[in-house]
Length: 293
Ligand SMILES: CC(=O)CC(=O)SCCNC(=O)CCNC(=O)[C@H](O)C(C)(C)COP(=O)(O)OP(=O)(O)OC[C@H]1O[C@@H](n2cnc3c(N)ncnc32)[C@H](O)[C@@H]1OP(=O)(O)O
Ligand SMILES: NC(=O)C1=CN([C@@H]2O[C@H](COP(=O)(O)OP(=O)(O)OC[C@H]3O[C@@H](n4cnc5c(N)ncnc54)[C@H](OP(=O)(O)O)[C@@H]3O)[C@@H](O)[C@H]2O)C=CC1
Image 1: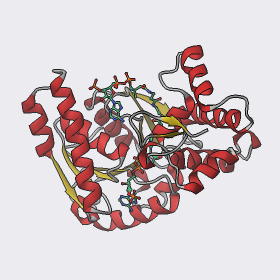
Image 2: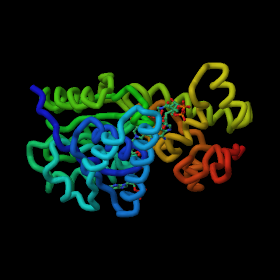
Image 3: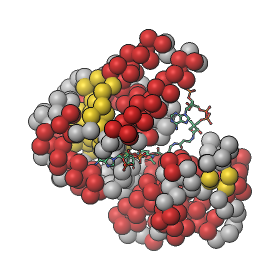
Image 4: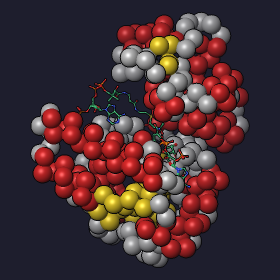
């Protein structure tokens, strides 16, 4: 039987964390947002306010709803601040060791009946659950980017996840107005198992000189009706996240078809991570994006 979630903790206030905080607060839940620095938290609150204000401007929500949603979000730099949450969703970087450390520290302070979830794009839910004190109350709740716009959330059970946790997560996602797709716990789940090899192939297409950035993106936007070209989408997701997902697929499925493109590795090594660092397959520092190849 599902338990009703009233207070949600979100760890990591980057593009996914701030989006999840926004939709949860708009749905009437109390939200505690955590990150490693006050600067990150202030920036996340400004982003959320910006998105909510746009929604007010186009009359999707009222000014009162914007204010109430913002009032429902508090922020904290320590995991202690999440101790009384009913559900905590981890949305920090896509690095297993970072996530494991967070879960270890979180579980020491979190009330025992609380559910712990990860927004991981690719990492084994069963393995992450094993780093907690509550594998039966652990689940993958995988939102899509940009969270406020995308209808889908993948739900992934680990081997030990119990029915109460699954039902609670399903009810929570429904309350946010989103649809679920249930995925088995295999590397990168459903969406990224299909999407990321396509993006990686687009980067190989660039690497091998089949087309330049503009041609590849135009080809897929105009020729396959994708809303964004694959390289534009890679920049949007974050090239560090794309690389981490490909590494999980490559290692987890032991198939050379998932080998991350060396050009993707090079961009990440340069610190050109896409929109979040202002440079990736496009340079975003000017008035409009300029291809970097
Ligand atoms: C990596 C993973 O683990 C899984 C993933 O998420 S994979 C990525 C999945 N996402 C996609 O494939 C996204 C593909 N792109 C799209 O669907 C569209 O380009 C888009 C929805 C992002 C933008 O649509 P658009 O019509 O071109 O842009 P635009 O009209 O400017 O924006 C539409 C809405 O999206 C919002 N939006 C755009 N970018 C946003 C962002 N980064 N964050 C939040 N909201 C955003 C805008 O605010 C706007 O909302 P309002 O109508 O409320 O003002
Ligand atoms: N980007 C996407 O399209 C999607 C991403 N995801 C997944 O969501 C997660 C987050 O991705 P995304 O939001 O794009 O990443 P971002 O890099 O935008 O945000 C991650 C945030 O977490 C912070 N952080 C790092 N370590 C910690 C920690 N120990 N405690 C608290 N906060 C921490 C980061 O700070 P700092 O920058 O200082 O490291 C940053 O503010 C990843 O697991 C990713 O795979 C899921 C769906 C889609």
